[in-house]
Length: 183
Image 1 (cartoon, rainbow, N blue to C red):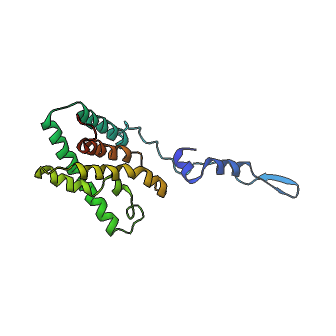
Image 2 (image 1 turned 30 degrees about the vertical axis):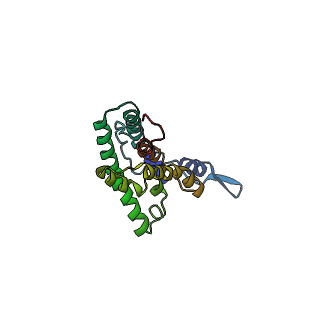
Image 3 (image 1 turned 45 degrees about the vertical axis):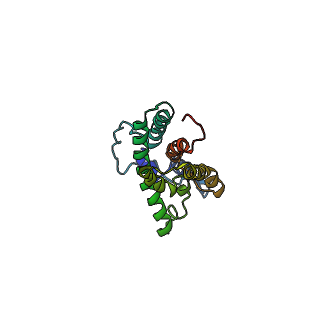
């Protein structure tokens, strides 16, 4: 049977039906006759694999980490901050509103709002005001770092693509925390 046939009649069920014998008046006969294909669907063409979000996010994480550690150019750092903080601010606001206004189980009480927390939009605005953001960055970094253990303790499933997504912003937050002087 083809895969489309097996969706409606799994292999183990088909084999069990084919092997069952009914005994009546000391005469054994099979319960079902031979398998017959009623509708045959041609197999779908195998397409080239699309980019996996998880692989793309890990590549972006590596690029952001390298740009953060290696590059000392202020313009690149500022541009990277503006781009990433803008994207993560939008995501943080969406997570906040879906947690507050949604009753859907996948959105309501989703702990991803810890990893991409509401302090990121505040830090994004502070990028343009030239205020010192070390304390607020440290607080945002600690909250983001708590996302993984808290989610695991709460029993929430973690999509593997979310790990590099949170690590990307954590790298930028770590830079602004000034734990390391030369970073």
